[in-house]
Image 1 (cartoon, rainbow, N blue to C red):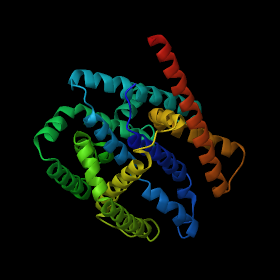
Image 2 (image 1 turned 180 degrees about the vertical axis):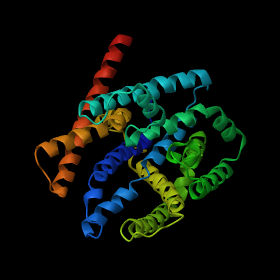
Image 3 (image 1 turned 90 degrees about the horizontal axis):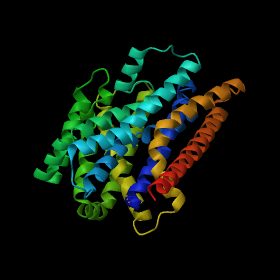
Image 4 (image 1 turned 90 degrees about the vertical axis):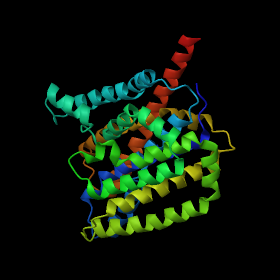
Length: 336
């Protein structure tokens, strides 16, 4: 098993926790009174947590470009298909079977094909579609990182991504790679120059944290104006891009300070290795929780939110970590 960097594992776990919170809260917010303090109290952390997909792309870039293994494109793509796309297809089938079972869908091979290709069957599947596009374009990014100055590359791709966010809008634009270019590219530059990048970020950590606070305050305020006051903010997503970058780098630095010189507990290490299956499966457990809440006749929004969250976190982590533990033990026994 390849030794994982503790700070990246910590960051991975933190974002996994946040993505579950986002989807649990997403079932509560639409039913709340937008003029209430409770709505704002849930809306703001929900919005400010919405950097996790971008963060996963950053992490992917760091991990792929910090690897010292020789890069062979056919082998790489085969590995990504086996480790990422096939599990995704399996979970698409599981979700689709569940939705058919509860009467939401009738089986249609054509519909299933479209859901799989576009990642539209369930809200979180779009990440897989985006990630696979970056994997397919790896030779291009390998060439760019090798040939172009890293700082220049990051600046150029931040500008490109901001322009895309501001002016390029079409159906499914949220699952096309160029909407997320800067996150993967910055991760790639950090990965390719890991020790230098780490030292650089440490040196300017106060600037990173100050940017996080400033952009977070602005993003929260404009979220309030948009969602509560109904204001139209044309370049809101461009602001959110800069908030996401500051949040990702801040979380990386916090993870670095916590775990760079500490050994990660075995339970957290197991959790880190389980995060992909947790990501794929957790929304199914939200649907199951919702079904139980409906059957029990629970209508209070706060109670539903708390029970939905408790059920989803407990069941998802227990089952997925148990699955990873058993799988690794069986693999070690077979290999040994």
